[in-house]
Amino acid sequence: MLIVAGCARMGSPDGGWYDDTPPKVTGASPADRGTGVSSKKVVINFDEFIQMSDAQSKIVISPPQIEQPEIKAAGKRIIVELKDTLKPNTTYTIDFSDAITDNNEGNPMGNYTYSFSTGEQIDTFEMSGYVLNASDLEPVKGILVGLYSNLNDTAFTTLPMDRVSRTDGNGHFVVKGIAPGKYRAYALQDADGNYLFNQKSEMIAFSHDTFEPSARPDIRQDTVWRDSLHIDSIAQVPFTHFYPDDITLLSFQETLTDRQFIKAERKDPEKLTLFFSYGNDTLPEIRGLNFDSSDAFVLEPSQKKDTLTYWLRDTALVNQDTLSMALTYLATDTTGVLVSRTDTLDVLSKVPLARRQKKQAEELKDWQKKQEKKKKRGEAYDSIMPRKMLELKMLSSSTLDPDQNVYLETPVPLTKADTAGVHLYTKVDTLWYRARHIFEPREGYNRQYVLKAEWRPGTEYSLEIDSAAFVSIYGLESAPIKQGIKVKAEEEYSSLFVSISGIKEKGNVRAQLLSSSGTKVKEVAVKGGRAEFYYVTPGNYYVRCYVDANGNGMWDTGLYSSDLQPEAVYYMDEQIECKAKWDVSRTWNVTSRPRHLQKPRAIVKQKGEAAKKLKNRNADRAKQLGIPEPK
Image 1 (cartoon, one colour):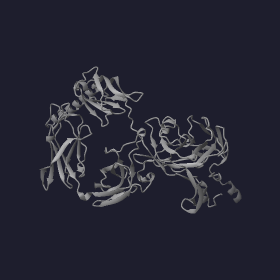
Image 2 (cartoon, helix red, strand yellow):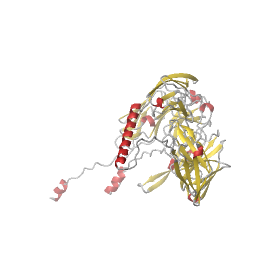
Image 3 (cartoon, rainbow, N blue to C red):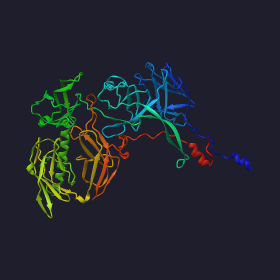
Image 4 (cartoon, rainbow, N blue to C red):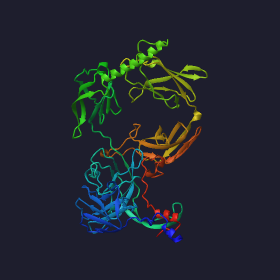
């Protein structure tokens, strides 16, 4: 009876051990690393059903194929059909990266490359390295990297690349199947699939260094894990080490200088904005078709003059929903030459007059109701709705660092800015005294003003602006302003001094203090090889610098046609802790680490993908059952 009861006990069926082994290649046609191949169809066979993931982005065929090849997984095989004519005496490589896994468990095969040669020998050299964004040393993912045996500068713009690869999430690339010889390396974000640089919108990288592939035997250590926590052994594994393995390409996008009119916009009834793809010192001409355009606008150009904002002076024009105009401007033609062009535009206000009038009537009604309530309660009330005042915006907080200034912004252009109506007072003991200051328009910013003074640490100030010191083009006057300003004491700050060496590029050097998230906090000129950051708020920081080759005080991109590289950028790989009352000093040689290892990992935004690993679920299963794992 006990035996029968035991046999009848319900339970889950045991499905057996998991398939933890990755797919294996059992053969290929033509044979892998075969020579004298003339077939454009490749069939690779596996020992189990397989699948491919992200084939378009991961699989790279070299030499590059102008006509897109057909790649598909079918059961236990992968079929690749090349569409381009095969080149004679050429090694072809199909780099599958980690795109191949088994069909059931998703076990990765690992990086796999198939190759064949149309000649009598196969080329096996490899070269590898990194592509970084020149402006911030971020790894560039998915950009094409190509080699040219033609060392002329024109090859990059006239010929397809000889051998190609693509970067992974760490910006790393490996170009395979290289023949002996000398090469130049380039990176290209190929927009049109022709494997050469012919569009300014394409991100590129170039180097005048020539690279010659080589190889030598080497040993690497492979760690064998007993489980997720314990190392079983460390094996010494011989392998062929290919050089160079540290090519670093700094990518950039050229400034787009072709000028085209993009659009006209009138989000607010008081102004219209014209957008161009690039600025020009010759401003457009506007001829009104249903309004008088003479002296009708106050123009506010952006710094690059690619965005032009026209404020309407006359309230009658503000209330006109549609402005019809003839716009004459300079634009780039098909030959790259600036020519005059005229467009007819109807610019509509996104908020029509009727809607604005309705809103004003509702505001008046709400105000009148409030006054009626005050009247009934016997409180003071108004019979005429007061006119709106011009509201100034303080762009600075009430707590100030000694090396900062105070900024104000007006909502619309002004006809009057009375600097005599701006007063600054400083508190000494318990008394207030006038403080010397300068109040002026902020250079490079529309409708902004700056208040400069000798801001003394630990001191209180009072900014006071008289009523009607500012008057807008619509006659609105500013209300009186009184704003307290507290400058923090020196004891609340740290100072950081960095001695910088190793820079070979010519030009002024500027250093930047970065927050723990990588955003710029301060920027100073490096003088005598020393960057000095004062009034640093306690916290953790990073430091980077760039070579200001043209002396314009900002980082500039490169230009291939002028053989101009982007301005050099370097990162200090150390996080620096700054504490209150501390003077922190560091010494930094910018060449002490390779460029691809300089940017601290904590502020790298482009994180590499985790490598695909075998699931090894049998080890967990065996541990649960208390039995040995199957071999």
